[in-house]
Amino acid sequence: MNIKYKHLILSQREEIYNGILKGYTKTNIAKQISKDKSTVGKEIKLHRFLSYRCQMKLECSNYKKCKFGRNCNLDCKNYEPFICYRRDVSPGACNGCKEISKCRFTKYKYNPIEAQKNYEKDLVDFRRGVDLTTDDVKFIADIVRPLLHNGQSIYQILHNHPEIKLCEKTLYNYINDGIFENFGINNIDLRMKVKRKISKKLTVKYKKRASKKLLLNRRYTDYEIYMNDNPDASVVQMDTVYNDIVNGPFIQTFKFMKYSFLFAIIHKTKTSLDMCNGVNELEKILGLDLFIKNVEVILTDRGSEFYMADDMEVNKEGCFRTNLFYCDPMQSCQKGSIENNHIQLRYILPKHKDLTALGLNTQKDLNKVLSHINSGSKQRNNGKSPLEIMEFLNYPLFEKFNQYGIVLIDSDDILLKPSLLKK
Image (cartoon, rainbow, N blue to C red):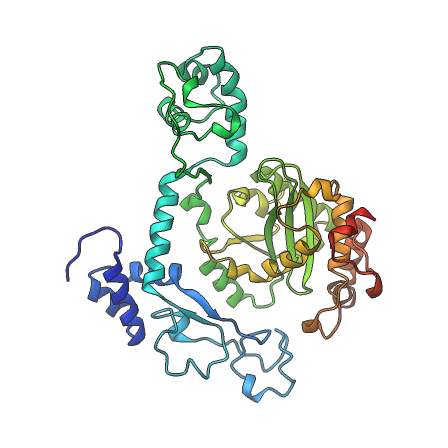
């Protein structure tokens, strides 16, 4: 079969699925559909899904002979990382594996129909997407709106405002397509333009696209290689939480994996500069030496707010302080630990609520929330809370956060409801 389409089609995805079932390598599957093996590898990696998560703390090859009650940690002398060639190398999914019913390790599967649906959805989103963040759109709208209402042309506006990094045709098309509708600019504001109704099917997505240069040596595969070479590295997962994309507030979250400790910084806006300043603030709280030791790796998603990678890795004094890596697209499970912590955060800060009205206005309010979340006992920590674990294992780090305002709450006084912020 010699299909010359640039993109994979459903029949080719079904061939990939059949190849996975039979345990073929990516090279063999690629020959079946007349594609390069890298295309097959990317397809499987991008569209495979998590079908089972390992219940053990670590995937250890020696778990059957464990003498320590399977209380896994990286310091265990018998710990040997489990590597499955079929799952981790080629073809890259567990479909058709004879040991799948007995395997207790994390499993990934590939479904050609779901892969096709996800591809089509992504294709539509990409074509409708706007290579701008919400803050970028608001910034441009605040400049353009009054000038358009004064009768100026797009050319005149751009000529007098070089800070708007768009060409005349692009800005015209954005306005014509309703991109700025939510910010007070309609296509009727354009000269010689007849008013028309914007299609309801058009859902505007403001999403800055990551450049290949940004992702160089920072992809999830690079993270896996780094962790394989540095298994004791201190990893911090990073994300953002918010309810109102326009008005905020925005919460930049950090999870210190060694202690299951959640830290967060509140922001009024969600720009790349805000998130970079959040990392700078974390360094200021800990001090450079403690920061380098405990934030050796930062793992985050590809949200446009995290695109100032160089400035996050190197501080203002030019000192290299951390290694930043990005998860694969649509693979939040790769930083699933912090996602689980967000569930706890949502007990106090529920979705679809005005966080400011709930009482979240300052960093002091957020520290109160974090104190209660990090004081709760965890089964995986043998009943100890993240703060207790940190205090025992790394007192200097515990003391820094304690001085910042995150304190240990008595177990009977822990409150994980919105009413916490009203007290």
